[in-house]
Figure 1 (cartoon, helix red, strand yellow):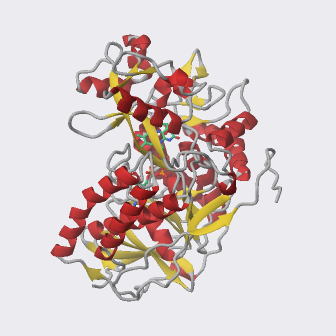
Figure 2: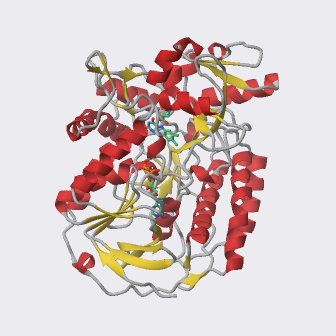
Figure 3: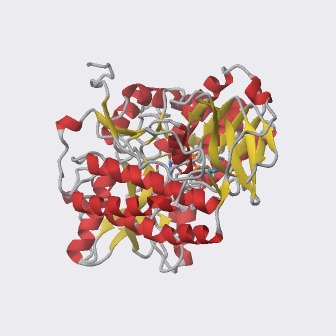
Length: 548
Ligand code: FAD
Ligand code: SIN
């Protein structure tokens, strides 16, 4: 099968969430920017963000306090230089949004700051109550259009084009046809991989494509064993699970078991506002102990305030006949956020020249072993700005003016292969939820590995088509996550091993990474199964100085 037409731009950005759009806006004055999205422009996780954006924005707060909270929530495993960048540049990025006309919620004329778990200060800026993601995305889309950014919707990027080890562009499929695009820089802003799990808060588009593409191109992926599970998700009898924001607990909502007993005080000094992994495991334990559901009690909010502060949650619960100011809402944990990702430097550069990564797909090191709530939208803004600056500095070369078709061979999947891939989705999600979810142990992870190895040859490289590529991408990410989770024989942050429940000092500075060891097959065929590598970070001391 041959590629059809293509196009050249200065910058190709894959993904139209907060990270992709903000980077596009910052790059627009430096050249032609094209943003591609596999579905519509609101397809990723950004649209669904509720709680808000963290930034030190009050007189009682400071970037230093924000840094300490981020570092501690991350199990003291994060990269302090990256956290420093995040918290120090946060207020400037919020000012950019204000200049853009983003309408953060206000109280008595001042920006209203919310509280979330593991934050020592109120520092969460929100929009439309609990509609932060939707409102933010609409504002960014509006601005990007004003700046002349080109959008290509329903364009599924299948792979990155490489020439002499450099990233030169992409291959994408749209309406069943394959196309190429050349650029001086390609920016991955494809989000995380929550869809590899059966129970997730993530949008259907979030299938780990950027992670797998980066791996195939030779980039380094790291910290994939760290995946955050959100404690409070409402699972309606039918339909998609729905997040009940941590901001609700920030406003005093309590967790209660089937006997009407509050239990979080016994578990953590900050009770409902303890770290997410601890709250999530406590809910599971309480469900098992009592043999019944755990509920979120937010009745104290009262109807008027609940509707005003949390309009989305209020109306979504009402769809199922539940009044949050009158009824208890059953909640359970679900897969929420990928902490690890494509390893990047402080300007979003990956190990592949001219390839950048930003947002949830990237591993900047800010989240350590567990993310502090509301630091993710912020990461997209802060590092999007830095990626744009670094990408703009790449001199134009022949690549972005190039027009000839790239030489490559792709095979169109047969109907039988597509059916086999479709049939794989549910068992894969179930396998990952059961054995690589909130609580892991050696026996389960070994079982998962065995199954993934069996499935591995089902998907191959150089095949065209969305279903085949998505399944291959999910399998690739799942295999790396299982390998990393099996290798890290300790518990740290959101990686919890039932058979190794304590943190082990020997692992304190140790990271697990993946980089492909063999060239990809030139003809359609299977890739090598990913193997973990280990490296140590120079230890950060408490002031962020490197001490070894
Ligand atoms: P996304 O917004 O997920 O966008 C990914 C984009 O990549 C999409 O446009 C998608 O179409 C595109 N894409 C993917 N693969 C391909 C491909 N192969 N080809 C072409 N396009 C592709 N964080 C906070 O900080 N505060 C919050 O309040 C908050 N609330 C959340 C609530 C929910 C329910 C969820 C799920 C997450 C929440 N998070 C929150 C996390 C945060 O929303 C995400 O981490 C963040 O929005 C990710 O942004 P992104 O731009 O990296 O990716
Ligand atoms: C939430 O509103 O609880 C989600 C916030 C986040 O994931 O950062």
